[in-house]
Image (cartoon, rainbow, N blue to C red; front, side, top):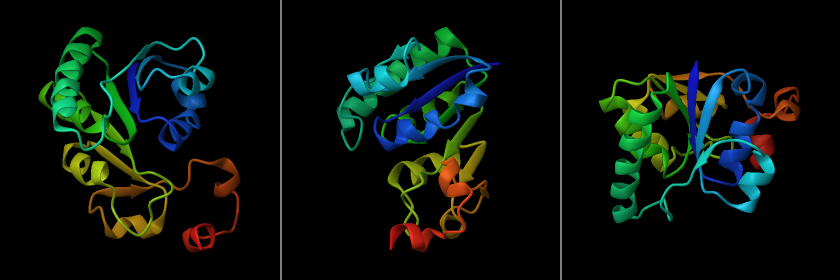
Length: 164
């Protein structure tokens, strides 16, 4: 299987990195800003860098959509997987047009409100995964899988315990 992993840096990248035992078994490429942080988390990985800023920038959304169409046509992944944010939307739209399945994982840190990229990608997703039960009320086709962070997953804490 060939996988396109796309996300923003920071916590979004950290959450996809938690899935390493799964994605390292597959051919893959990343769409994430090519920064020192990215290279330290993903040494040796193939990275395509989107136009920045990726969030709430209409010109770059259009540019990233064109990048998505070119990249997905060239690479022909079997699935596009993301934790958000801004770069996820143009890649999910392109994947939908190219009939490539998509998996969106709603972020760990957003519990009480739906994220903007989550709201935009929800209708484009073949599988929409949630980390907290509280997120189920925001996404009708969301599927609860639990936290990606092993320490949190094995803890008896609830979402409100973690976020006060």
